[in-house]
Image (tube, rainbow, N blue to C red; front, side, top):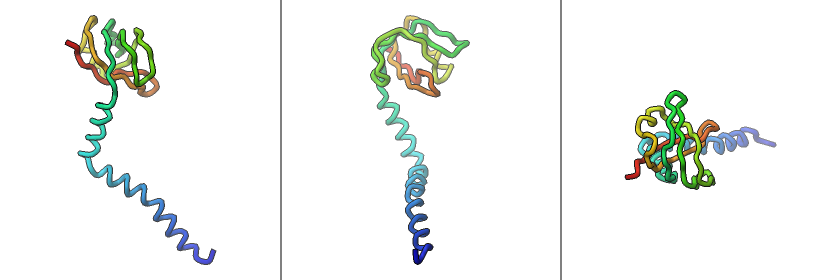
Length: 116
């Protein structure tokens, strides 16, 4: 090649484009938090009934309907909770709507909503 500096300039320009886009998105906290809210709103909530709470282990047993986001049929199972304080919000027998995600390899309840 006759002029390697032109090739280096072209490669540097192409490599910088994604970084500029990333920096522009990160510079807008309002947009960032809106994305989090939209993601949380997009997570479907499943129906469930609290069967058991194990505060020491940070786990909860829920009899639930289908978990569409995980392609899982209705069953009773034990979940971790994202925040141990969530276990103080419910008691056995409560009917809830809840969101569950796979976090660090474990199915984890990320939100509860009481059903009246």
